[in-house]
Every structure is written in C-alpha cells, then in structure tokens.
Image 1 (cartoon, rainbow, N blue to C red):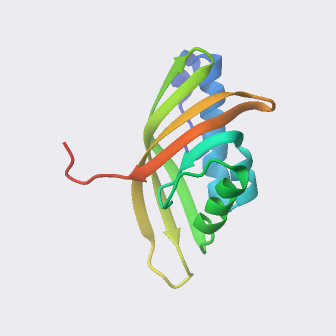
Image 2: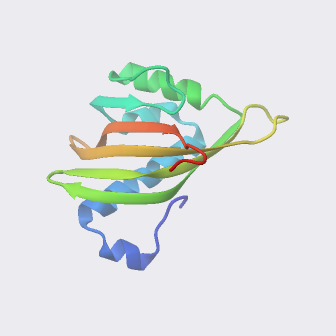
Length: 144
C-alpha cells in the first residue's frame, strides 16, 4: 500500500476517515497503473478539480478524464502521499497534505520528482465515498 497507515493510527480514525484514506490509497494505486478512466471515476459527476499541471478548473467528467489521460501519458508514474490531515465536517471529510509524484516520460529520460500540495473534499455518493473537490499545486520552496 503506497500510503498505508500503521494499525494504531487506523484504529484511532473514524469509519469515515478510514474510508477516505482507503479511497486515497486507491487513487494513488490507480495513478501508478496509469488508469485514467478509473481515476476519473473516483470523482463525483459534479466535482471541481484543479490539477497540478492544469491550465483551468475542470468541472465536467469528460474534462477530469481528459486531464488524467494527459497527465498519465508517461512511461512510468507513481504518487506517494506524505503528510495527510483529515477532518470531518458534517457528512464531508476534508483532506489536506502533500504527495510526491515520480515519473519518466520515456524509458531513457531522467526521473522527474515533483512535490505538490493538495486539498480534497470527500462526500458520500451513489457508490460510496467520492471526490467532490480537489486542488493540487506545486510546493513552494523556501516558503514561510
């Protein structure tokens, strides 16, 4: 599991937080498998998404799919979640933290490593927990 938690931490989480954490594990696994359709399916049909490399907000399912088709069109890619904070707010779970992407565009190219920060909003959907909102942006070096 790419971003698995140890047993003691998972025991302290609420059921909603565990389900969201499992959804984030699924998201990172699917990124590594380069399965754009499956990643996009984790987003609610009304989700708002501002991807790390996006030029605009995507708020229609075909736009979310288009982003991931382009983003995952690489020889190899992997996402690892680092710091993660979860908070419940009514029926929603808010997530903030960072992930690190590692990728190679071609087998011969050098690996690119990008540390990015994110926020997600998760809510109950027709098929369980779903991503309602997601923002990701480059990490600011030497920030305050």
